[in-house]
Image (cartoon, rainbow, N blue to C red; front, side, top):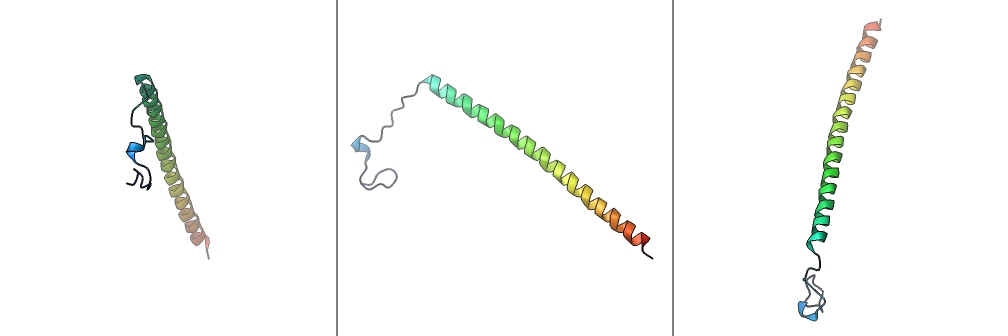
Amino acid sequence: MSGPNGDPNISNEDGIINDDDEYGEEEYAAINNMLDQINSYLDDLEERNDALNGKLHELLESNRQARLDFRAQLTDSSP
């Protein structure tokens, strides 16, 4: 019989796989707290990324408008 990951010679009866949780409520609470912190950091990072993306679009639009204005000045000053 193959094992849980397709390993040919490992079975649940071999005693290698132990599904008994050895963690108490304190460990789960600590893990949950860490996951909450990670989620908070990721939310903050996403907000910063969105803000930077908005500023980048504003800068690109400003540069595009400046190029158009410069071209217009060049064509107006041509003889």
